[in-house]
Image 1 (cartoon, rainbow over the protein chains, first blue to last red):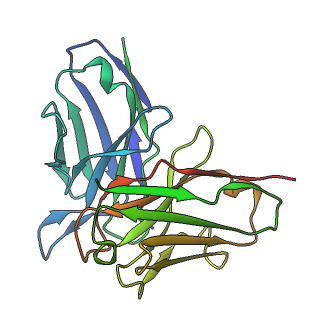
Image 2: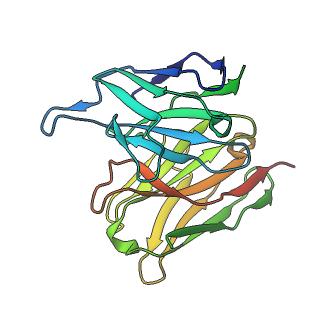
Length: 113
Length: 122
């Protein structure tokens, strides 16, 4: 199975500052036939289900603010929140869907400094 | 409005069984693969099982293989998860989720239900 790791476990960022979360997969999630990275990012707030932010590693889901962006390829990926807002306090998960084990990372908690 | 509503959770003794349901509305249910994802109290997300739109292909996490069965009734727009031989470590909120694109099992999950709590305890 593909193992997903995330760093850091948690971070605190001042309002308006940049937050960066890293995600690494134990094997490449880049599918050569279509050149797509099978990697998604989700946001989960307390008491709520996860919300899809980014898919194909860098495609923003409809309605997601453009301060959220995804980058990376192969095994190394990044979620960036360009200017942290109070409503962005949440846990963020990466997920691979390259294999049908659909593994999630352990999550990164984002708080306000 | 696209919506998923889970039901069927509750308290069950170790070794017992439970069947979860997920009622879908607002989209062509049979065109989309579906998954179950669980979250133990205070823990992260764990994918449990997936099924293709037709129901012809199913997938399971190693942790539930042989104990859980995923199925769907496209005439009723409903997804199911039959859970047998339940263990304490199966205690979690169980979410159903829809993939973002038709006909593709391997895809991100764009719509999630609110979840149903399963507690396995004597």
